[in-house]
Amino acid sequence: MGAIRNDGMTTTLGELPSDLETCHQLIRELLESLAQQTHLSEKLQHQLEVLLRQRYGRKTEKLDPAQLLLFAREILAAGETTLPESPPPTDTPPTPDSSSPPKKKGHGRKPLPASLPRKQEIHDVSPEQLPCPDCGTLRTRIGEEIREQLEYVPASLIVIQHVRPKYACKACEGNIVIAERLAEPIEKGLPGPGLLAQVAVSKYADHLPLYRQEGIFRRHGVELPRQTTCDWMAACADLLKPIWKAMHRLVLQSRVVQSDDTTVTVLDPVLGRFVGRLWVYLGDRAHRYVVYHFTEDRSGDGPQDMLRGYQGYLQADAYSGYDALYTSGKILEVGCWMHARRKFYEARTTDPPRAHQALAWIRMLYEIEDEATEKKLDDAQRHTLRQEKSRPILTKLKEWLDQEEQLKVLPKSPIGEAIGYALNHWGALERYLEAGFLEIDNGASERAMKPVAIGRKNWLFAGSTEGGKTAAILMSLCTTCKNLKIDPLAYLTDVLGRVSTHPARRIEELLPDRWQALREAAAMVEADQAD
Image (cartoon, rainbow, N blue to C red; front, side, top):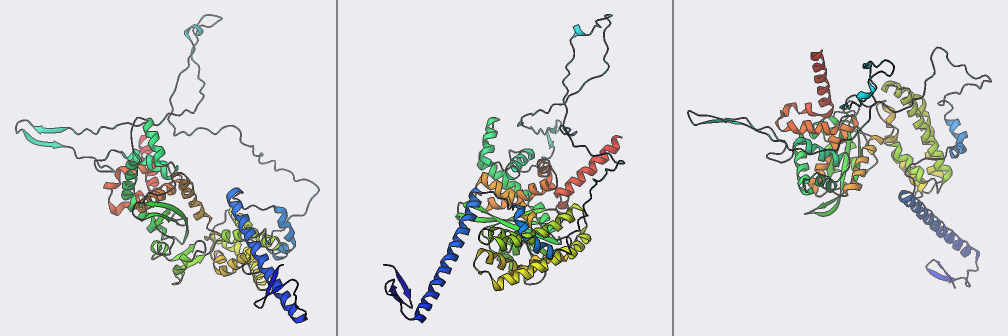
């Protein structure tokens, strides 16, 4: 027979207490135990749903718009001063403007880039077809028809022989002279700058591991073991580190820096297997550089080292490793509404009414950001729009959060943790209202982590601590080039060919954006001279 523990004593179901006070006490304890078990069951169910969604479900956090209509009354009550009034319905449809013709939808393929080389193949008629069938006179050429076809020419490896003639005086039989050796990326090394750039871009921009590249080179008849190419990448990172430092220095001149981090498995021959971290630091629109940094752990030492001397806004997640940066007041924390929204989204199964109501408030905030983007507002106009529309919504949301926390929700429940997260970081979450150049979330830094995540699925791990640092430097340059619409292969081929002899005081000329500007200026000068 089952037993019930009451005040340290075991009471069987056949020996229930007879007095009313003891029965009430027993009922209270049973209800408390039941509440604890229910709370534990809900939390486990929530964790199971999250794990199943991450493993098998969709990664997007989309909601059915019909669910948010349940809170239409609350949303309209809070946003009556912020939502634009819809025009009254009319019976007659609007007449189109006859002055401007309607835009036609594009059809057909896009034209091929003019920068691609062209090779003509003439398909002429046979000599027997040239005589005119009526009079027999030979027909003359009056034009041509050209159809462009895009073709692929497989990549090839070539051997460049650098020949330096020697000269000597026959009369003296001596005084030999020879041209100086050209600068090489790797002193007396086999690879040219183009090959080094190809290996680096293939791995750190196209996520092709070195062992797969080894097989590709073998098909060309060249044996390049992965250990050799790994050493090449370390040498390239050492050459390009001054450029990485210059990018880092300019990122610290930004008004706002976004940061995030992700894990990287390391198989170090000395330290063994451990989980390292790749951090990213993004500059603002005036300093559009992506700087990655490798650390052996997730302690706050990495951010403190990279952001030493920085003054401005830092937008990141609520990781405690950043907290030491905010104590001096020189760095101001900007929260991320994407992280706050995610917690309410994950709580929607255990407490749908509260979770969806919070999601409705947050959606209104993002709709205001979309409005500013669609209207192409500048920083001042965006700041004004947020004060007019976003601040009243945040005020209502804060009042709702305070009320729900104090009166209704359990602190350890999923919805309680979501509300607690928002309240604990409320100052950082609403700080984006202070300036128009601040973003509502740090989505840009999370997107900068995607190349790491995609590459990690292919190359799986870093071979050492130095390998992690190499990856950070080369990924910084490749990702920055891609964000600036610069071909990373062309950039690295050119820079690796001359960085070893480039003056250190002019290293900023080799930054991707300034390198591109100098090339465009040189092309314009050549075009003017040709004219």
